[in-house]
Length: 387
Image (tube, rainbow, N blue to C red):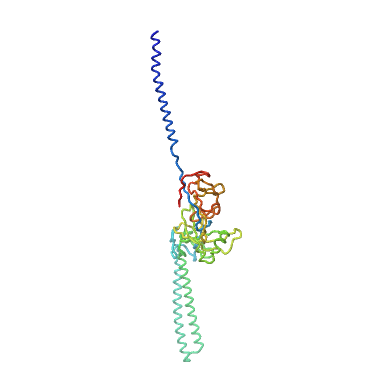
C-alpha cells in the first residue's frame, strides 16, 4: 500500500517542470513573432520617383507627316543603238558605274571597217577637190587671157564645186561611221548603280523601236521623295512662302524608311501646278541626300515637311501623353502635389515634342515618365522638376 501511494507523487514532480519549460518556449516565440511584425510594420515604404516639367509656350518648327515613294533623280534604260552580237559585258550586277564607263560591247569589226572605208572615201574626195581647185585656178587665168571659152571655165567651176560637195559628203559618212562604232561600245550615260545584264554574251541584238533592254542605271547620290500634300496644309503653311523656286527649296524635309532608325535630310524641290480634285491634294517632290546609298527607287517612306515659319505653342514630350480609348491625356501635379487627369488635344510633331492644341493653358506641371504608375487623385511626395 505504501509503495503504490509514493509513485504518483514522483510522476507529478517530474511532469511539472516540463510543462513550465514548454510554456516559456511558446511565450518566447510569440514575443519574437510580435517583434518581427512590429519591425516590418515600421519599415518606411519606398516612394515613387516623380519627374515633372513645367509646360510653357515655345517657338518651334511644326513638322507635317506624309507617306510617299522614292524615285530616281536620274535613270536610264540602256538599249542597243546598233545591231550585232554582244561580244563583251564589262560590269557586275549592282555595280557602281561612272558616266562614260564602258559597260557592254557589240561586235565592233563591221563598224571599224565602215570607219576605215569612210576614211578612204574622204581622202579620195579631198584629192579630187584639190585637183579640181587647181584646174579652176588655171581656167581663171586662161579666161582672162581669152585663151579658153567661157563654157570651158564654167565646166571647171562646176567640177570644183562638185568636188567640194563630195568632201562634205565623205566627211558626213565618216562621222556617221564613227558614231556607229561608238554605239557598238555601249557606255554608261549617267553615273549610278547598274542593274543586271538582261542579255548575255553571244546574243544577237537589233537596233530600232523594238530593241531589247540591255540593262538599267539609276543615280543614287540623291533621290526624289514623291508625296501628296493636303490642300489645307498647302494653303495655310506653304502657299504664302512658295512664291518662287528659291523659297520653295528652302523648305526642309526629313525622311525615314523601314524601322526608322536612320533619318535622311533634304528639301522641297517643287509642287505640282494643280490640285487633284479627286483627292484634294497637291503632288510634292523633295530631293533627299542618299548619304549611305541605302535609299532605292520604289521604297515606301515616311516623310516630314516643315512649316516655313516657326510657331509659338505649348510643347510636351511624347512620354507624357497617355491614351484613354480614343482620348489623349496628361497627368497634372497641382499645388498640393495631387495628380489630376487632364484630357488634351494634340497638334503636330516638332523637334522638341508634340504641340498641344487644347487642354492646357501653360504653366502646369505634368508627369513625364512612367505615367501608367499613377492615378488621378493620388498624392505624391517631392516631385522632381527636370528641364
